[in-house]
Length: 411
Image (cartoon, rainbow, N blue to C red):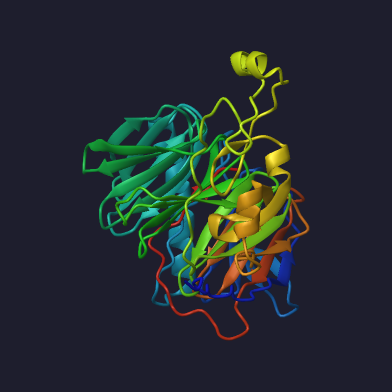
């Protein structure tokens, strides 16, 4: 039977459009203003700046405000589809930030606020903190509607308006799904797949897929809508994943890591789950005992070997039977990984065709934001520089897409 031909990933080399280099400290939250040559940024020095592009081509702060208090402020921003008076829009943004910092933080969280998410349809503001409290407020009155105590402090948060499900990623490495009501919530399920803390979440409400990035360098795609519990691993980063965003018009996932890497994943392919690692006391290929199998070592008069696992079939194998390496892009392995000899022979050149492209931002990324209506990507680095990238494919511009809600981490 002929192998299924997978679509080739589109070529989307990021083009650096501009740099914003006037920040006095690291920008830990920023957003591109749709339909405007502007950026709103929040820095570790507690300053909020609105940068507008001048005739010279450079971005300069048109509005500058310093927040009171010791904690770093956060920002949640909604991209309003219809064009409005610029001054009115700016006033609404600044007012929302001021209200969040001055009124709700002290009432809801005893530690630093880690994530703020504004849901326009519900008129809710969701927030989490290092005190392990997850709360949601009425955005008009500031009244706290509910509170949920998490097992570890939260570092990622997403929300689905249709089902009122909140996706909560924390420092234990797990993702919890909560069903929110007006004044209560219920636990739906918990996903455990990462060996490091969850650093970023991204929700695709159309395909109903949740992406989680972690300090373990991996990304997991959780199929929420399919109801099968499918979890697809994506291995393409060498350092901690710092941000995730999804481009629905091209079905591509964009991820970034602390070493400055930007990876663009083609999600318009049929991906495969990685197999579970099998347990065995001896190599499942040559039957040589592993070093803890004292009885077989004594009976066979052989020295025990170290156990490895084939990334394609999951079998427990010795080093001699798994000496070869290969990429397996449809399983998410864009780098070469250990495979057993028989699996290595079964992998064709077509199977090795990459499903992701890799790019270097040339700064250590601490935060990223994607604006789908423009096809622009924003990266903020530890070098205090904000970079704007054109992610538009050469064959066409992105279609209009309304964003439901954004996630804004504190760092």
